[in-house]
Length: 249
View 1: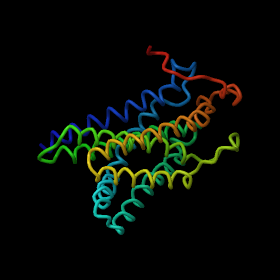
View 2: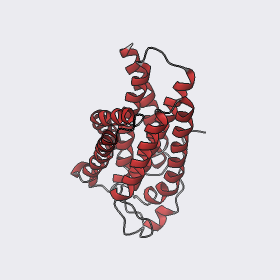
View 3: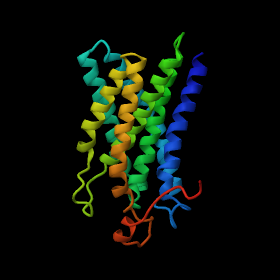
């Protein structure tokens, strides 16, 4: 039963997180654009790094979700701090590494990295549920909705945590911008998860929808101006570009 739960959790986590990278990050890779805005090999390594970093973050995630229903204030504060700080610190270190930070495509690597983290968190959440002796269709829907919320929260936090850019002075970003949203989002997901299947479905979809809306509003201004590694393209030209999946209908 445990192996089956882990396998199912891995399938859901990889499907959602890798699908996000393929669809959203892939919009900025050839053949969608004349020249990829990032190194595809580095992008996959960033995603893989996120999978490994997500493993220790499973402990505070599950601890948080288990502490919220009985409202254990100490546990909630501790696990929430560990979870959010771990995500933010890991991305901060990633973008300041020589390997991921020197070619100017850090925003894409941050997205891939956070998607990998989300994949492992989703794996743990799904596996924990399906390791129980009984389950229902409504509860499964709730777990999937919470999983979508986790993915959306990680994606928008990745963009919000990017350092401010001089060429986008009107858009304030940075770790301190991402932390409040991430903390509130995870707390709300934990509360929804422990409040019954119906609340889990509504809460998970609400967080996913809000994160998706915010992501769409801030992602393009931050991603569209990133030039290809080593390329010489003016920022004004990049900002006018459109992006989509040209290799699919």
